[in-house]
Amino acid sequence: MPHQDPSGPLPLVVVPGMLCDARLWQDVDFPEGHDVHHVQLRRADIGALAEDVLETVVGPFLLVGLSLGAIVGFEVLRRAPGRVAGLCVMSTNAGAPRPEQYAAWREMDESIAAGRFTHVVERTLPDMFPDREPTPGAARRYRSMAHAVGATAARAQLAAQATRTDATGVLRTVRCPTLVLAGERDPLCPPAFHRTIARAIPGAGLTLLRDSGHLVPWQRPEAVTAALRELVAAATGTTPAGAPDAGS
Image (cartoon, rainbow, N blue to C red; front, top):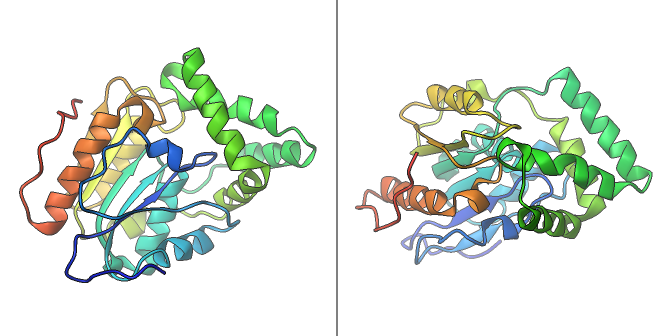
């Protein structure tokens, strides 16, 4: 576990979504002076993944998560709310899995086990983009990242998805500064999911992004940059650093 200076800037622990890795955040300008720690999702249980997050740094930290990464973050809040000094979640869902989701995850896992990982990547690809219509370049970028994550990690992530529970009750107990970002054209996690999250967390801010689908850090990196600077300022009681206008 990395050493942390208790008097220094809060570190950011950044958790990606399924079939994503640190490349998801490569267009984001993280707040200067803050260590950024990227968590990899390789365990088959939400609780185990939450423990991976908690073991990343010592002491309090700012938690940033997208999709499955945010769901892991909700479990972190359940286990160690005092460690999370600020929260930014995007493209996610705090509800319990639905029956059709369990069925879809089983089918994808069976496909991967049968050697059809590429089929699963292609199946998930449209849901990552506004209105399910990626440009050729965006599709290539997603395929490259998903294949780098690989079949073994993908199967673990599918298994972890099936262990998640409704987090709404946990969210009502959150007392740290919280920002919620949602793509208005996200076919996988629509704005309604994020309104539910923002209503549950006292004082949470909600930003709906016109030109974004599921992969907000790629599709609206300037909005994520602005949100993270705002989060740092709220968590530390400072004035926000200059950042591009996030828009809505």
